[in-house]
Length: 189
Ligand SMILES: [Zn+2]
View 1: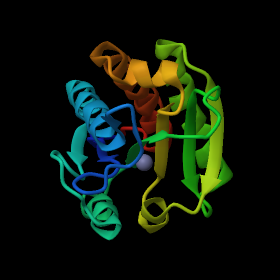
View 2: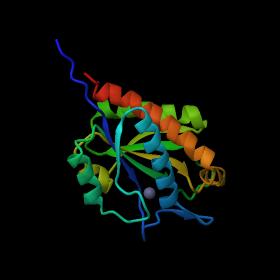
View 3: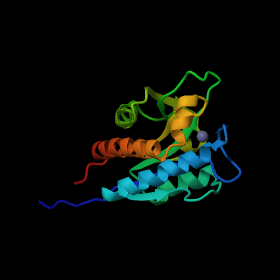
View 4: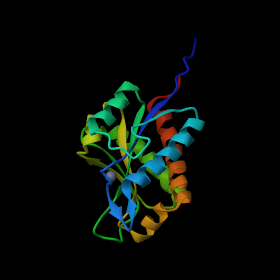
């Protein structure tokens, strides 16, 4: 019996870019935070032998369709979009995970491991896995999720997002969770 060794492929999607700044608060722009985390996450996953592709590596706006197409072209095992969140209520903080409205329950349960692994490192609150009609997620035809890593409306989390150590911790936690999910969804034979 022979075993085919398969390498994992992951597409990381830093939300927004270019003229699309995403949320802004106190001089911080969401697009910059998203990219900073994804670049760190790429580095960590690559050290584990995961093949990583980013939908953008600079401050450019990439159309939703283009982002989704990259996942198909790469035959990715997982598509991970990174965003921040914002609410009127400055008291709300934590990490939430989002999947498309058509995602199956099985995926939602697996993805919860990523959120758990993330908050295990950052000591944030894990708010849960939710379904959303997000444009990019609905276009991706491989297992896909969006991580909203922090609330820019929370003064405490906004301050954390300006700290490279915190962004590194988020990437470390997410990388651990992503590796667990990859082992479950696409076991290396
Ligand atoms: Zn966003």
